[in-house]
Length: 295
Ligand code: GUN
Image (tube, rainbow, N blue to C red; front, side, top):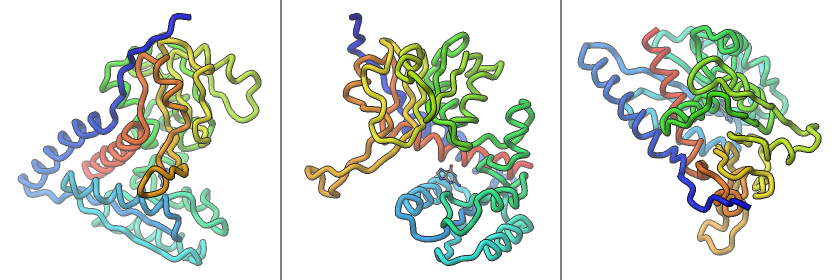
């Protein structure tokens, strides 16, 4: 077996830093010319620990590039009507360029109702059907942050994509499905032959072993094992999970959807967790907010 033993890291932290420096320069120029800073608001409902961490990272990233940011927290008992009222108020706030409602929401609130209520021009998450439709048709709009971040990561490291077989694992509305669309577009990165796999896919390992580019977004810790990956593959790991680890002071460590130690030696390129897709997702959100501010 021809096993590749040297792999290169798709370092999302480094790629994100480069893009964020460009954003910060642009914001500084906007302010110098008398304009105001782009302004993002994040709505957090309830007290999900992971969501709180993600939203805090988004707010911190805004500060680092010179954006204005507003964190709006609401208790878990907030009703759907109350949240929809808040969304409408944010839609009409002239001081605000874009906003996100962090998912998941408490189970008594219908996420679809909330997504549909957001003004597509302020939908910097790119989840509204108008923006999803625009993405499918290749029209200008907001791309969903995680898939757009992955595209930027591949671009940053000049990963060849044309004619490659890209296998996506997971068909969520916010990652797997849009990822499959972006990778099949007639552009760079893109022009892949894409297979979108999911929980009902038969012979999954036989398909993933054919992937030149493998993008697991399935939400299961260390699901992708070495035997599922072709030698020389490019692997972009979307998952992020806390697993117990008594050797850590915190009592846990972060892993992705990929069993890194087994898979990495087979890869030409692989993204780490943490420090891979996560920083790029937040960078896409900043790029979308900048675009919203520019109108
Ligand atoms: N929950 C997990 N990822 C995301 C995201 O990109 N945006 C929002 N709003 N919620 C999320």
